[in-house]
Picture 1: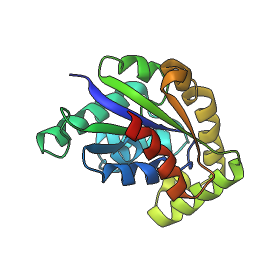
Picture 2: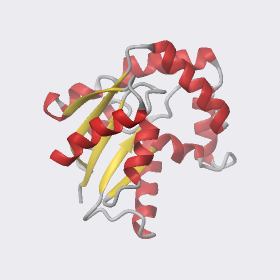
Picture 3: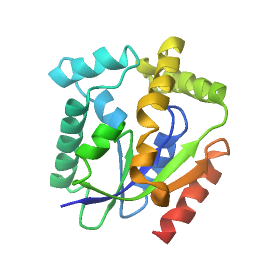
Length: 193
């Protein structure tokens, strides 16, 4: 079965998690933030150690463990009745992170929209990430050089995913406006799907 899904897409700190949490509270939408799934791993588990090792350097976790963890999470959410794939739209944040992951998941995901949340101000993104580090105790967001590395990795590895899905699915959203206006822009396009 292919999961109907919408992707929240953009650089770290652009507000994908904020929008995903809101959308996940709307009936028939289920939000999955891959970073949150990783951060909720036990630090002493094999996958938890992999996550800590890579995120501590600002690098992405390799594709295979990322997708394995994501599949386990979705299966568990389906078994427990939190996610109903036959009726819910999956709102993904943080996966696929690169073209290889998009290729691996093409038989699993029925992508109906990509919401490309774009910010023109990298300094704003850095400030948001640093505030989030303090507010949410996210150690992977605390170090400025790691933040800059993550933004570089996004540009180099993640941004090409937009071309993979094609212009017809990509909806550019101005992430520099207040979160409520970002939400309105997303919802305006969700209602048309």
